[in-house]
Amino acid sequence: MPAFLAADGTKLHVDEAGEGRTLVVLPGGAGRHPDYLGDLAGLPGHRVTVHFRGAGNTPAAPTTEAGSYWHQAHDLEALRAHLGLEKLALVAHSAGTRAAIAYAAQYPDRVASMLLITPPVAYLTDTPSDVEEITAHRVGDPVFDTAMAAMREGPRDSTQETFEAWQALTAPATYAAWTEKEQAHAKIGHTLRSTVQAFLSVAPPDDLRDRLATVTAKVRVIAGAEDAATGLAPVLAAAGLFPHGEAVVIDDCGHYPWVEQPESFRRAADPFVTGP
Image 1 (cartoon, rainbow, N blue to C red):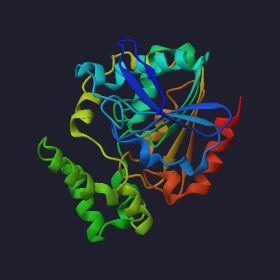
Image 2 (image 1 turned 45 degrees about the horizontal axis):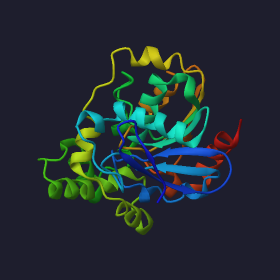
Image 3 (image 1 turned 90 degrees about the horizontal axis):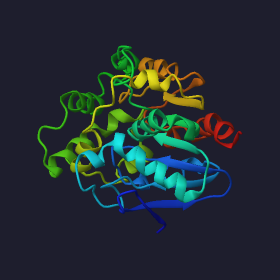
């Protein structure tokens, strides 16, 4: 498996697939094994998918702080140098968008573009969540109601076993439908509770939004119209934090658009990632 060395000498793993423009792909989770991304519905390009510290085949960080998304932005800079690229074209999903945004905030001149897929943005914008509104038509479905109740409550303790049980319980709410296709996808990609805790351990600086206002790269946000994990209104508002930000909404879609609505996802993503 391909790998590169971080500044501290740690070997960090990546997966490589496809041909064309190099896209650095950042999985969500936080720290979920990137297998759950599949091939992103055949997204074109040379996809270099990162295994974050403590996720997939990359070892855990030596300190909790080093495993945070804010500090792993420095790993992305090491990857850029390893790939011999002047700038990175980033494709990030869910919590992985935190690392992409952290990289843009710290290395704004090194970003060619960012495709942010269903980003959780409560830390970026004050726009109230509209989850209740966009999922009201699903209320009354026992599976959905149970999943939403668990999502609101959060995991009860920090054991790996109960964390995995909580993830399984909440999964139906993260898709717009819960058919065999979604159920199968939800089982792909292991996530360690300790990796999640480290990933989210460092708060971004108070001037993060000011920093993002200086990012000149083009940014496209893809939102699911029924994404109970992020809401819709906050995600649309986050696109406006970037000078060249825009949003595309995919209907009948939750948190995983390449799985739920692959054709619509490709229509939204392909022109962006293959463009100049």
